[in-house]
Image (cartoon, rainbow, N blue to C red):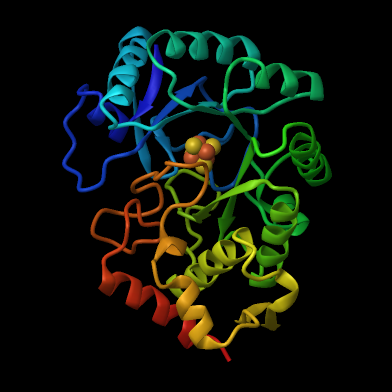
Length: 318
Ligand code: SF4
C-alpha cells in the first residue's frame, strides 16, 4: 500500500472530490510518522494530528500497483505531468524509492521527484541513480533562528547538505521554504538569494496551522506579507533583481529596488503568485481552504486576481 493525496486519488478515479483545481502532479507518500519533530507538521513524531494529514491535505491509501498504473494512464492523457514521492519516516529510503520508481517506470516516463531525508552523500548519489529527475531536500526555515525554534536536527547540516547536493547534481535539487514561521522578510529574501545562487529551485509555502501540531495556535502570514515574498522569490529566481537591491524597514521589505512601473511590468502575468517549485507542481489547497485566502494559485490567475495581488505588493512599498 502507498498513500496518495485526495486530489491525486480523484485524478486517478479512486475517489470523488468536489474541487475546482486538480493536481497536475501526482502526490504520493510512503512511510508512517516522521522521525523528526517539526512544530508545524502533522506527520511530526510528537504531533497528535490526524495521521492522514500533510499540511491541510488529506491522504488515503491504495494498492501500489493500482496507483502506478493509474499515474501512467493519467500521464499519457496529459492529466498528470509529474509524480512527487515523499518518504516521510527516513527508513530504508533508497529501497523504498527504488521500488516505487521502478514500478512507475513500468507504465510511463513521467518525471519523478523524490523528497526524503538523505543520510549521506553516497545515499544522495544513489538516490539520483534510481531514475528520479529531481530530489527535494526540505529546509522549511529561512534562517538558523527559526530552524532551531521549529525543527529538530542541525541547521548547518541541513543547509550544507543542500549546497553539496546542488553542487553534485546541478539543476536537480528543490527545497521548500515556509513563510510565516517567525522569520523576517529580510531573512527570507537573503535565503531566496542564496538558494538562487546555488541553482536550487524553491517551492514557497505559507505557514498553515494544523490542529494537533505544536504550532496549531500560530496565525498564518498576512496576505500582503506572503505576496511580497512571492514577488521576491519570482524576481530573484528569474534574476530580475538581487536581494542586495532590496531595502527593509525593521526586517520588512519596503523596496525591490525597482521603479513601480517596472515592477508592474515584471509581475503583470501573475506567474509570481502561482504555486512555485518543481515544474508542473501546483499543490492545490495545500495552504488554502477552498473559498478562503488564496496564497498559492494552482492555476493561471484571472486579470482581476493579478490586479489584486499586484496592489497588495505595491501598496506596502515605499
Ligand atoms: S515542489 Fe512539488 S514536486 Fe517538487 S518536491 Fe515540492 S511538492 Fe514535490
